[in-house]
Image (cartoon, rainbow, N blue to C red; front, side, top):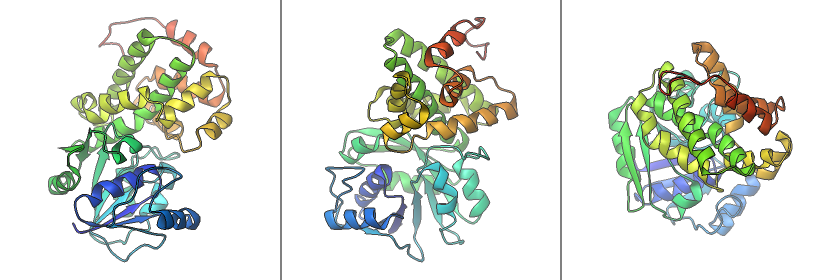
Length: 328
């Protein structure tokens, strides 16, 4: 794979461009905003989303898409994923899904959208504890590439693995995708917990039950339980729920301060995938009759149907059961 096109010039797309450039591939970073693309071209730096990180020489920046590529990397918000995916030529190609979310309205995973609009493409999903600014600065971390095509997953593993970024492979696309998507919802809850001034006991209990809830819903959708104990499950959950770099965590803190959802999102200043994912996950859970008390409580707070404290009270007042036999 010598021609890589990264679709999405936000923080994660820019960081991935830098990673792929280390493999000596020719990398094109594409974005839809002419002003943003022009600024990145001029400065050789994404000062809006990834300040302080210079683009390698083999990363080109453009608002025009090429006719072909060996690998198309999609790193846009879930709301834009389908439209951007439709821009990829309808021919055999490789697609790396770097978007972590579910499609609002259909509750589809991103790989299901690829299968629907570009059935000739081979795809893989990349997920793990990968905060963009840390990845771009070379802070050591790891990720997992999941694909029905083991060869494609191995190719991505070889291209991205280096001194500060380690990639493992998996065939559990459903589990890796759901782990990467659902952790954003629970990161909102973790931010609420910290914003309310609760301690480590609260967060420890919340994250343990979050992981349980994530795995129950994931397994009902066909995922492997062990996937949620790995990088795209507990690894990503911990990173996103503990870091002030996380948009969803910051959103939770703003909600705990009493800001309505619109005001909290404005304060974050970037897309918080946990919001549409929470709505979509609720529909998924209903479709397979799986109780999701934590996500349901977070959804009530997002909709303004409960305050953070009243949602917590309702959770704590539920009947308690066996830790691993009870879904709640």
